[in-house]
Image 1: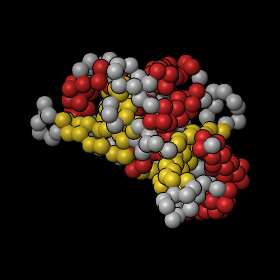
Image 2: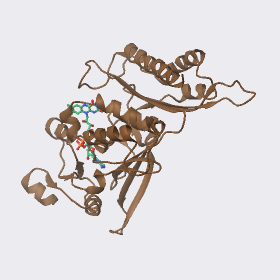
Image 3: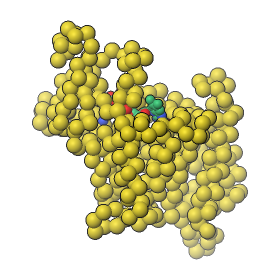
Image 4: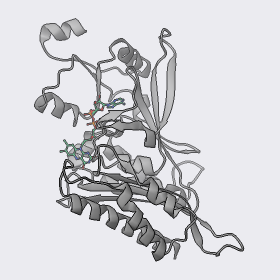
Length: 324
Ligand code: FAD
């Protein structure tokens, strides 16, 4: 294959239909690039003069195109297009899923946030071909979906052929929060591919919200975006009997080389009531988490910081209104 690429002076294109064949190809040619919508690879080949001897189209591998409703959550194949995912999420949110088991609305907070974020993701033409996996593996600092995967505690399911045993595969699960290692660098080993994403159901009194601010309203990349989740619990007897924060995750895109989890802000929220005082403390802590230096790529430093703060404010109001 690589000889053919060398002779033709261009990449060789293969399109396996079986998942096992795809893993074998990746094991034999670790430098092969998987392609789904080519909305990233195409740009790299055409404008950044990427040289890649082997391109592997994975649109016809059934396992990568499945969306499965499971007891833990929604398992989304890596090659599922964003338009297809939108359609599945809409159906799920409307009727609670097909079959005998119906899922309550409160379990689908993550699904709703994902669906809303997809609405503002590129234009219809891009969403029709671009895939979930392509977006994750590209690891763009302004990916609209990666902050949502992280905030919802989603898990990335990776797979490779086990060394020396061509028929067996080696699986690995990596939490979205640990997958992004640096600027466009992810925890994906040489022969591994991303197989699917598990988006967990939310628990009772757990809320998720997405945010994105661009220059244009439609079809534009984000200046700052975010995914936020909070789990509340009723205060115990003897304690103030109000709702207090049990768990939270606030993740921002567009403020650093990888999505940034506002961990200090979250630590200050745990055990606190969902009140304006708590919000004031959280906003003060946020400036320690979202640090954008004056010379940071992208500029607009003050604007980006104020967007981060205003998303948190909006999240606070969103959750407070849900609790009314
Ligand atoms: P491809 O280009 O096919 O692949 C991208 C990379 O992922 C490649 O390196 C490929 O090898 C790898 N890959 C793909 N699948 C796997 C797998 N299963 N395992 C391992 N590696 C894999 N992004 C946003 O977040 N928000 C936007 O609003 C937005 N707007 C855009 C507008 C335009 C006009 C364009 C061109 C792009 C935009 N993007 C946006 C970026 C882009 O659309 C996404 O990153 C897209 O989801 C990539 O999916 P794809 O299938 O096209 O990836």
